[in-house]
Image 1: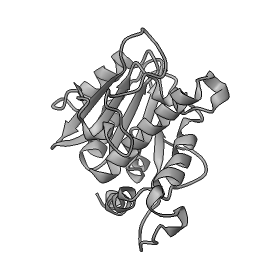
Image 2: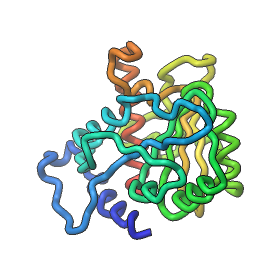
Image 3: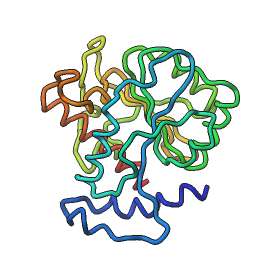
Image 4: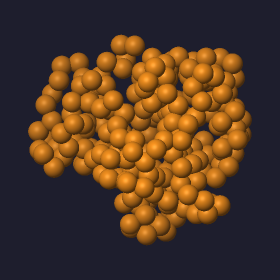
Length: 230
């Protein structure tokens, strides 16, 4: 769709990180939009609003470390059935509880994902059953598959040779990364049993050590970089 044409411009910017030039050297491209991430406000009773400081901190790092211009000082919120969904190339969802989509929302989210959009869902220890059920409705022909450690999103701009970092313990199992593909493109990324979003929060909220927060931030920047360059 036309709204996603900006991705090609942003991808060019993303290839050249901040270490290669100052943030003020980003060229002005006629008609270009600043990059934005919106939060998905889903129904079903789940706490879609959690990780309240995560996106602001991530967007600041996108500007400062990747030198990508970003949109807005406040977090955008979109609903899965709304037309506003298509204004954002990247959408984030999290929560501990139930995620439920109506038939209209399911169809709209499917159209979003199959026409250029991208969804990152971060498990907050509880959303897993309802999220997997919803994904079977949204993308019935694109099951979630575990991503190998060799996947490029683990190797640039930061290296994660063992895959997702483990931020919070949950059940104590390994952090796992899942994805759903459409026409060979990764359209859904699911971070499970790790809580990257918690690691992105302001330090006083969870009390995570600096190295955990840095790992969560670097992995999240890898994800943004991957989306904009693939």
